[in-house]
Amino acid sequence: MIKITKILSTVLLASLSVIGVCYAGNNSGKQNIYFYKIDSQRIVISAPTGIKFIDNANCNGTTESTAVAISAVRDNFAELYASVMLAHANNRQIAFWLDGACTPPMAGGPYPTASMVYVY
Image 1 (spheres, rainbow, N blue to C red):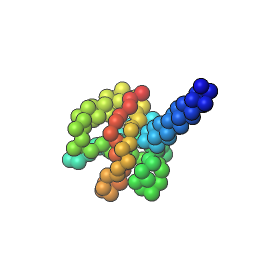
Image 2 (cartoon, rainbow, N blue to C red):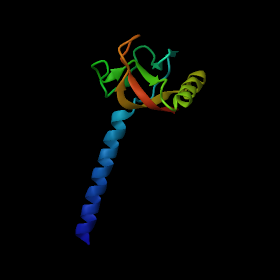
Image 3 (cartoon, rainbow, N blue to C red):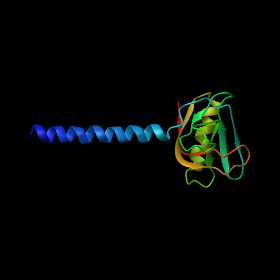
Image 4 (cartoon, one colour):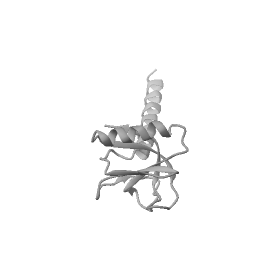
């Protein structure tokens, strides 16, 4: 019985460690919104000058990014876009769940892309 408990505890701790690493690797960290810009392919949300979002995709060759993008072709683009506007209008902080992809290097990019928006 004690051996089974030890095995289950080990498996549980290993699972929690993996979940924690995955979460930490994809969350941009919460920041204020300095401004956002919209073009035909995406919305780009910028952090205030000197502040960075965490970017483990290394889009610009670094683990920090001045902005995060949301592709206009995402199925949930309207909801994500509305969340960004709501956060900006109410001076709320925002964070993103990054999907590991990067936008093309245009208009200041490449930027890490997000699949989820968190409003604080």
